[in-house]
Image (cartoon, rainbow, N blue to C red; front, side, top):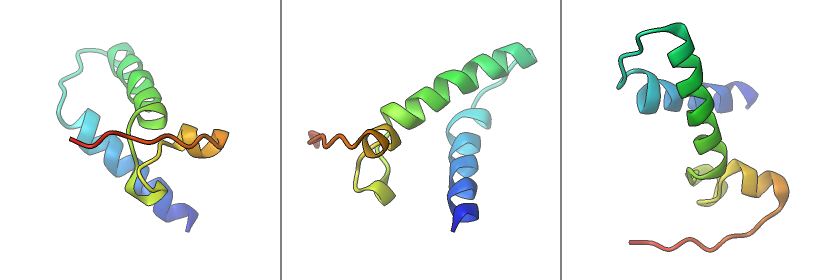
Length: 68
């Protein structure tokens, strides 16, 4: 099961960040990945977590999200 979660994470990173951008330097890539991982963990809702973020699950926070 651990491998499945890691594979999902890297698929998201590749398709939502890496493949859609053209980094000029390694530093630029690292900076972008830091921003993406913060977004991934604190803002991006996850279907497998019932629409919550990993930070909400880890911290035991229950947040009602508005739907469009």
